[in-house]
Image 1 (cartoon, rainbow over the protein chains, first blue to last red):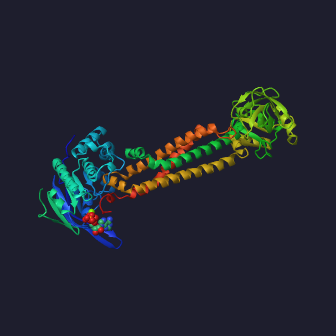
Image 2 (cartoon, chains in turn purple, brown):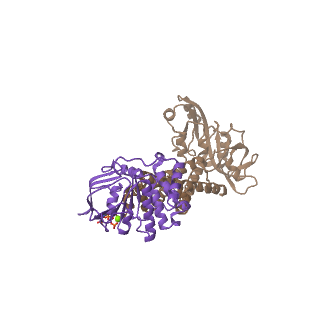
Image 3 (cartoon, each protein chain N blue to C red):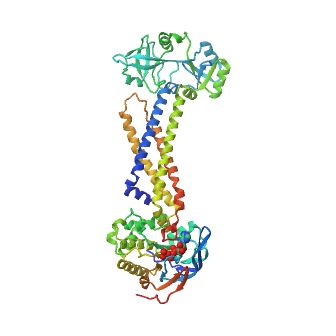
Length: 242
Length: 364
Ligand SMILES: Nc1ncnc2c1ncn2[C@@H]1O[C@H](COP(=O)(O)OP(=O)(O)OP(=O)(O)O)[C@@H](O)[C@H]1O
Ligand SMILES: [Mg+2]
């Protein structure tokens, strides 16, 4: 199996990104001139209060939303002006997502939930055998080898989130985006999952942005960026290693 | 795609209601279609079997065999027309017949002919007949002598022919003379003079042009192509349009059931589809999954409905004119699949509108 395709440029570069939501007459500036670069293998925690624009920023970085202004470059690809169809392709091939809530396919086993990624790639993806091999390896690594054949309803919250991490890593993305991956878990399990995320990212040299509003989680990151009312600021105090 | 198929396999219960409803609708479609075909085939066999290009009626007959009368003089005029190759007389009498050993009367259509229709041998000897297989159900056997009509004219059965019935009555193919004898003994009010027949079946070249040429030459006839003559039989086109209206209404119900069921299912899957779109599933792929599920449910329903219709056909009493033809199965299958595709297409808009950003936090 090939290793990470070497992306030309940083895994993520946001340049003066602005996002304005319009609802009726009112405008909400959710993200305001955000500039952020995530280096190769870097884990960045994005910390901020509720409604500060964390999810919006993450969605823009992952091609789920388009920005109103500014430039978005992921793994060397400028996605600023891409069409919805091109963004679908981009999300499938270039980024991994882990969401806050349970979002596995309920009628597929843990292993099959990983294989969905291969199925979505269709013929352009890897062979069935390679895909199964990769799913097995990932699940073993995530400590879920013995749960590969279980449905999500038969897994605990922490196990489900680990399956979701496996799914996000399946296509060897340049960047993995986590939106409050532990907020639905209790503290202890949450810390285990964060530790796992840290290990997985480190061992692969994959860059990640982890959204959280919990300062206790930031020490798993290399760097913490704060966001308040859509404005970013570096937070040297909260940065550091465990 | 395999996602859609896997869901069908793992959660058959979710699709059970739709499958059961569509099974009943397929059964209904097959039974309605089978009845229509049975009625059509049983009414028109004697005409469809004619190896003729056109059929000549007297112009006062308004395209009815029973009202039509043609003389040898007209016959000579028809024979003179360019393109005419052969002319044969034909006449029908619809009567009841007493079958030896049976209490109920058998409905028979005594058919006098000259040119053999397909599957019918040359005319038998006087007082004898080739009988349509349909009369077996009325207890008729080869060698029996039936007493036909109130006058009890004797007709002896020499052998069987198939699919030659006339207006749901079992055909008895006899010579023109025997037919006239039967007609004049039992229907003195509609007497047929010697050498007179009801219609001519004409073989020749030219189709519609031939019909027009014949009418122009005689000045006293109305000529139809064989296919038009089939639909001019009393009740045939009315049956077709009535049954087809019911069949197409049933298909509209199929479409509505599929549309409703799968749009509810799609609504229920909004969250899941949002997540799948977020991780790179295209609208096209998700929508294809919905269509595949709808078509699979329709095909399963068709198979079960088809088996039920087949078994039902075997169990139903023989006097119900149900005929399940391969063509009817094919038509019903294609119609169901088309209805399933169109019905599930209603969900396309809903699938398209699902925002991938809905998968994540509060950002949608
Ligand atoms: N689709 C939308 N339409 C209008 N306004 C929106 C939309 N999505 C988010 N917003 C607004 O944009 C701002 C930022 O929202 P966002 O979801 O990015 O915050 P967040 O930091 O992720 O919050 P939380 O911690 O509660 O998840 C909020 O004021 C929110 O109300
Ligand atoms: Mg959020």
